[in-house]
Length: 262
Image (tube, rainbow, N blue to C red; front, top):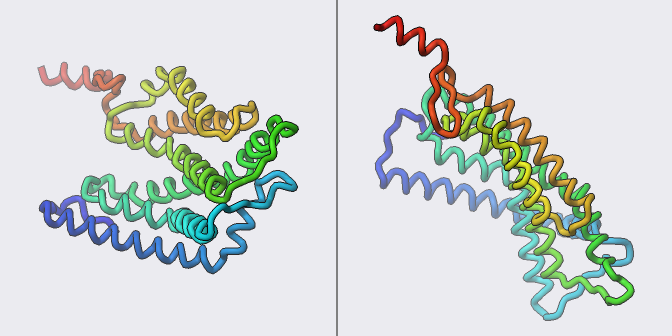
């Protein structure tokens, strides 16, 4: 549970709280790694499944590589499995920054971050990764003898999935910025064209291939999430004032109130 916003912590207490949160996160990570080790066969079967038919064999080039690659896979899988708890610990640590009225948003924020992060991973694994790998591994296939090295393949897949998971956190970031008054829905609508450009660049950079399907598979969800963020920003942004590009604009109610005090 996050610390109450009314509690004022000293620097030493903040560091002690950080130590406790990190320790709890590490314990959760160890549990996640142990679970990954127990389900090792299932885990590797899932990771190899997106490969094109006939290319499921993974090559290693040193005696220690099978163990080191497996350890890396277990750690990353553990992070993904316990990610909701890690997200909870992060938001619990910054809990004192929440005001008393904002504390009710704590659990919805944690739940939203968790669902979006895991949703991005599942989306990438099911829809984007198989198509991207098929394009890359079969590109000019008549000229290349393609072999997948274990360390390269699993690192590629892990960071690809994590990138999608983090990218899907876009609505949470934008809504929080709107909540604290940094941006508002009008700012998001005004800068929609620039957002589309950034989303297209992300789609081109993060997808494993440059084919239209893979890029659109990331671009379309990002565009939808941005539009959802506009709606949510309008709901959560501070009432009684409108902000555009960081400037406060008086509303009709503010003008009436100022005239009444004259």
